[in-house]
Length: 330
Image (cartoon, rainbow, N blue to C red):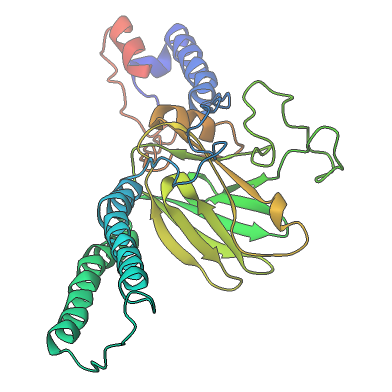
């Protein structure tokens, strides 16, 4: 309520009304923050299969790098040594104990030393494999931090739905792009190659799963009809989508980029047309992408304090100078 000198001065009251109206008109403009987004162009050979590839894809998550090290520096050397050793034994037996070289066969039926060795040695080999493998499993299912962004993934016949409960509850439906010159897979969806940022055919989609890079993300995965499986090989991520159940796992993408995967569970006639295109953006660009959706909010951002109702501010003393009274009213 305006009282005192300001209430008795029409000129000051007019100025106060003008300033109040300007502030009122400016407030919605400040509240309606708009975003912008241009899909990222994938890098050839990064986050996707490569022609003639026979090994794992390059990894872009901490778990993937750790798993790849176990495979390259533990499993493969052990497998190679055992395979060569068994091959050498077979060749030695064939050469040394064939009928021509050894016409009188040995009647030995027991050798304590050999039996102890071939029992104890495999135990140590299995222990050497089990320790890092169990450690990898434990790390894969470590819960996400409390403040981690949550994204819900739903498998459908035959497309994916991505929900963002921490960003205003909006959803994104992701369908595979149609392939030029082939039968239409998804009606109303454009063809692959019609945009500059499109990736490989059979893997690119109309709406990607967009996530922030460099931070843990809580993925909650389920299905609407039958069992699907959400798998992105270059991020060492695979988790089944089961109707009526929510499976949860942490996703961490080390650097921005586009990473492709596919449904890895036979889910019906169009199982092969359920690709996954995951786009990791820096946090600032991710926030801009979020704001392109109606009703979206930035996760983790504190809500602004509610403004005091009109007329409940401080009163202006009657003896205050005219200019000071104007500033107080504003």
